[in-house]
Length: 88
Image 1 (cartoon, rainbow, N blue to C red):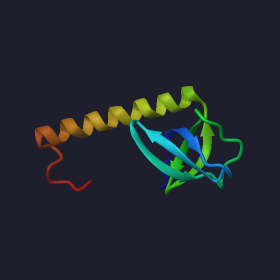
Image 2 (cartoon, rainbow, N blue to C red):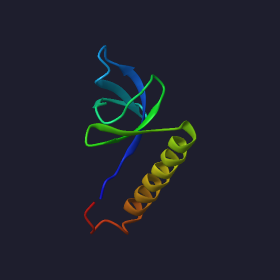
Image 3 (cartoon, helix red, strand yellow):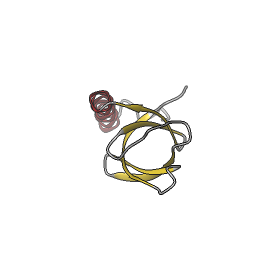
Image 4 (cartoon, one colour):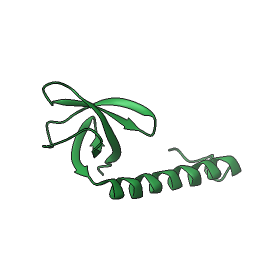
């Protein structure tokens, strides 16, 4: 299964091959070789250190909202012990 995580581009290097992206406050460097036309402020889906597509802000926010919901559910399950015996 491929899982692309939305991140916002906050810096693009001089040759346009790499970018620094922000994942909800965490900044990482990603490779831009698989996408064209990336600009500062764009959201990209990132998988295994590579931007795999550019997505619009509305789509990115919808996906990030789902991530937050999943995290909340997982935290609730861990807190009440219902997931304590399962591995992640």
